Every structure is written in structure tokens, then in C-alpha cells.
Amino acid sequence: MAFVGPAGIGKNLVAKEFAEKILGRSFGRSFHLLEPAGEWIKVDQIHEMLRVLSLKSLDAHRLVVIDRAEKLNPQSSNALLKALEEPPENTHFILITSALAALLPTIRSRVQVFRFFPLKPEQLKRLVPEAQDWLLQLARGQVSEAEEWQSEDPKRLLESAEAGLRALAQRDLVSWGDFLGAVKERSAALRVVRIFQFFFRDLVQNEAPGFVALPFTEKLSALFDLDSFGLCQAWQKAFDMETAIQGNGDRSLILQNYFYEFQALRV
Image (cartoon, rainbow, N blue to C red; front, side):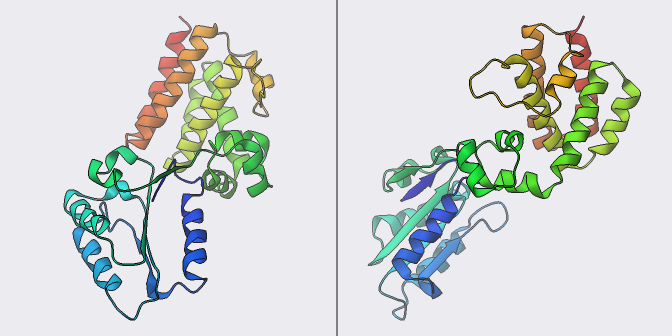
């Protein structure tokens, strides 16, 4: 089987529950979890997994979970393919991945695909009840994202984002510099950039069904004098900014460039 979908939406949890159904709560050596050792899942890991599966002392049923299966390199992929073609008796394989296309076509053809989709905000609310509605929107349907937002002081992040957006609207470079100092850590920068995205989405889509605004959207909206096209560009540039930060670019430079690019939209 292959569990396919974005990270953080419960694929691993379902795999664990499946293991409990097959093996009982005490997995022992009949349960084998493979994860990347560094950047890749290596061929030696596959060989060791097959060695353990061959032991006669194991229970009647065995389960192998390969997490982030898109990290199989060519050598480990070919070794796994042989196991899938001729699996040990009573052995089940679950490949967990967010990128099915990264797997060898021959591996894809030998697994049954189960697709997982981002959770709706009301579903997330049941799992992370302490999260506010705006935070559930920013979590992008991912339980792990909602939990990480909750663990990173969302009130402080929201205040930083509000200060940055106010500086942006008022062309206040000094206050923008203060904002940069408050979000110098990579995780904080990414969180605040996602709030920027949500804010410009608010301004563009404020009449959309199911609209959920940030707490400060109404207060700040009058400061932004862009037309719909300009707001869409600011929104898109906020996504570009996230991509650049995820690519380990210079965060201070990326955010500084955004300030000037935004001002150019107003000309």
C-alpha cells in the first residue's frame, strides 16, 4: 500500500493504527520502520530490513512502514522493488509519501494507492480545540502545522505580523527594520510570511463564502490603497517570499526586498 498526501495530515497515524490491528499493540521486531538516514533511505537499510523479516522467530504477520518513501535512492528503490515483487510470506508494506511521482514507476505499479487530503478547519478544530479559527486556516489542513503554530506563541507572531504590515502600508522603513529584528529566526519568518499571505487573501476575498479574517484585518485594511490587481500581486509576492525563505535564502534580504517590491506596486 502507499499512503499519499501532504505532510502532517495523519498518514503516519493511520499506519500505526493499521499496525496495531495486524500485529497487536506490542509490535516487537515484526514491525519495521524505515526512515531516511540523512538525506536518503539507503540500500543497506533495505537489506537489513529484509534480513530481519527473514527471521523465523518473528510473529506470523510482519509490517514494514517506509516513511518519506520519496527519499528512496535508485539503489534502495531497486532493492525494495525485488521485495515487493516477491514479498516474504505474510508481510505487509506501507509506503508513506507526499510525492508519489518520485517513486519508481515499477514500485508505483505494485502498490495500492490510498490518498489522504488536508483536513477541513472544523475537523482540525476537533483535534486541536485550543486553536483559534484564523490559525486553523493557516494550518493548511495539517494537524502537525496547527500544533506547531500553537507551540510557537501565535499571539506574538500575530503581533509581529501586524507591526510589519503597518510599517509596509505606512512606508515606515525604521519600523520595518524593527519588524525584521523580531522575525530573524527562520521559523518565525515563515510563520509571519504566511500571515501576510492570509492578510492579502483577506483583502482580496473578503466576500468569499466561509470567510475567516485575521483579528487585525479590518483595522489595517484602510491603510492599503492598492486595487485588486495590486493586492493579488502583493499576495503572490508573499508566496514567492515563503519559497525563497524555504530555499535557505538570506531572510533579512528577502524581507527587505519585499518592502521595496510592495512600494513599487503603489506607483
